[in-house]
Image (cartoon, rainbow, N blue to C red; front, side, top):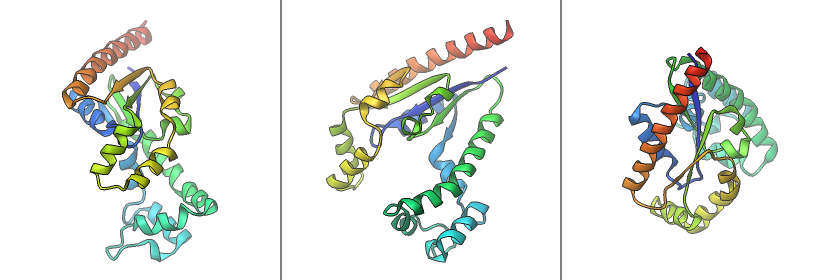
Length: 207
């Protein structure tokens, strides 16, 4: 029995993680791309060892964990260094993600929570793509509440896919410009839709 593969995305400050948490509570198997990216460079992993070999011990904190700020300072101003980082992390992230998909129980609705889904052009790899959306100005407000400066908030939003590009790949759009309760209602409706899609897929494969 195959699983239903769902891609969940949304720009920074859109509320993607909130929607992801709601889906997990409803019974989805959530694969969080951010957590996997951290796992592959955790202390005592081959990923972290490769980063130290490539960029030097200055990227480590005192407790031997990765100093993300130090690494960011090296790679974000130099495309060749960024390429070196990607060559180390991307294959490991891909392999661990595939492991997690394979480990999901048969018949699961598996939600891949991935901020860069649009940018990476991965929408074809899912049975259903969900985009969490809200106006850019509201995203800026939320990022200010998180402690970012307005310039930093706008810069981060501008570095990601445009709202239009993201909406263009959506099978379902969750409008998160209202209250938490309004988002929860939409997630409940989405869950019912995904369950029906999973059931139809199972019947199709059985037939």
